[in-house]
Image 1: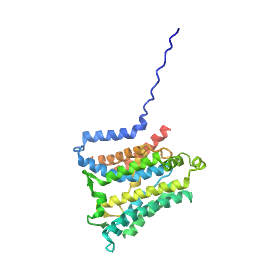
Image 2: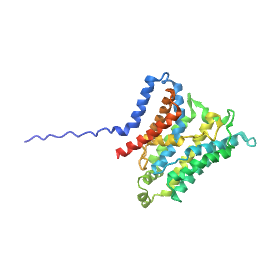
Image 3: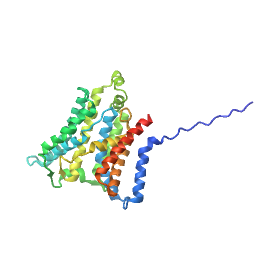
Image 4: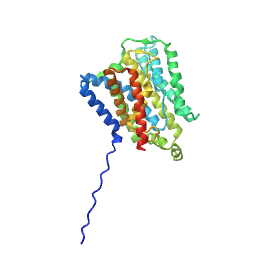
Length: 322
């Protein structure tokens, strides 16, 4: 009787490209550990996590939009609109402090959500390409913010509103907890709800999703509204941290940071493939890269060039995976 020999099952090879963002982040951390004094301190960690918070909050909304095959260039301008509305309310002497604080949070978020709905309707009802549709508010939104604020820098003293940017729990800024909460909720919605499955289905094949009964237009409007509201929240955090609102600066270049975080994280820019953990890694990488360039004495303008190069590299890597 002949003995039969079994060929051992081959283990699947590890696809290094899938973990390229995480490997790049760990490499950047190691580089700073070796070359940057006082990098491994609680203060440095808190600074980087605080700066990452606004990028990630906006990038979560951008991930949803990109997952449906769209893009949102208006997030920075929506941040400026939200940041311009809030001081008008919590500095209003005719409102009681409690009412003013509540309105200063609710109304800017509502306005930001409506901006997102406007983007979504341009895309779904008028069939405008997402990059063109959101370019409208990218250009006009900052002008709207300047009209609301009168074009002037609005300084305000530390008040209950600055709680949103300066409060700390266990030595960690409140926006870091907000960031983690939003990331957890967004991940749960994407993985465990019907709406999450609709988002992925629309990005994968909108025509097939529509034939399957997925409300494609409603889903697209919803993701733009979510993106707008999260950008509005990031705008409130930004002015709370700075104790001032400047319509010219709030949210400047945020669209570039958010898109870079999503692209580096591995979410397909053509839609249908989503990884919010990747967006977290991408946001951490973008912030740490900016921190590294600044501590090494490079100007912020150079950081813009590097981020643009990273987006190109991330997109090229995605096409190579296909």
